[in-house]
Length: 394
Image (cartoon, rainbow, N blue to C red; front, side, top):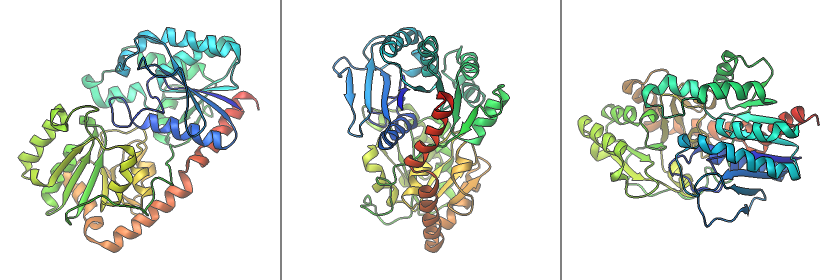
């Protein structure tokens, strides 16, 4: 098939760790590469953020990335991109009018808006992956939500107009059903993980011998890093590494980093909280392997790539039972799920993996087996292709 992916703010070529660079970038890159391996022709369309980048770049994995001129050729926060989606859609329509794809797969709501405007006049079906729903973000973040005011209404329109929807977890599928999406229109296909890069065998990052916890992500309040820091009061001699920070400059310049440092000082654990800043994606496997457990305690998480990467590396995961985390982590088998954002509950769930080597190894092996059985990108791509074939009539 000739597959067009639209990812307006999340280029698969972007370096991980920057603002608005995260799981969606990894998802688009991993899925595009796997689809190419299965014999499909894949082109990813994203907005040009730099004037010096080539119009078309062919990734080493074989998919093409087309940079669309829509607004200034500079990085703009994704929540401010809506005014440029008309131009983005126009350029997509011009390109597809010459040689239309068999199917369009839009990632995130603004991509869906642009893709539908361009594809509908050409009769090309659009499959939508939201990655996060505005209604859910507003529910959990309240006034801290910076999304465009029209997002929720537009997402409802996209859900009604597209040919099919891919939800990344059952929780999201239930939210879509509450929005009025008819049964059968949304297929649940999770994110995948690179099982060759993220594996138990390989170098491990250096450490000083204390039991180590690892938390990973952008330094946002909703990630719940403060819950983990507070749990250290009940986990004596355990150190916590928080891998994440600003795209540029030292981590000390980040406002949320300052707040987390304050929390650590108040809890009396500042000497055991390490914040190295942004870590390159290529360096993450070594950091996972050097950890007794990975902990994820966000307020909400549409899916979450970190638990998958940790499990693929054979590391137990303790996570709050929200969104996709409640499906990725198998409670009591590959780690533990915690129902509340309670530091004491998090500490209790972590303790067996930190101090019992047999429990840790058993959970790590189970995590690796689960990642290989359910979350390889080739398996995810095969399931996604079935959705494409259904909407395209193949």
